[in-house]
Length: 66
Image 1 (tube, one colour):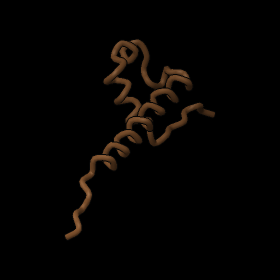
Image 2 (cartoon, one colour):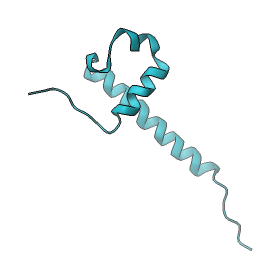
Image 3 (cartoon, one colour):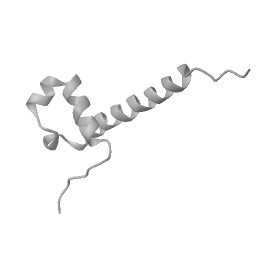
Image 4 (cartoon, helix red, strand yellow):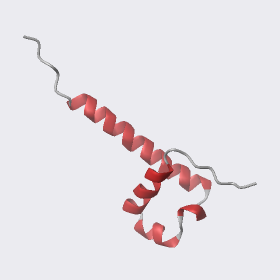
């Protein structure tokens, strides 16, 4: 049985890791990372998307009532 667990955040986590950890990216492919490091990058993606949603809510202009 395979130990591969794909989550909906994996693709974004791979891209984020490539952007911010180029040395680590060159040393080890995604498949070679241990679960703890994969979870770290998945968590960064979730935090990033949550922050983006929060910022959009905070700075969205409110409709004016006439």
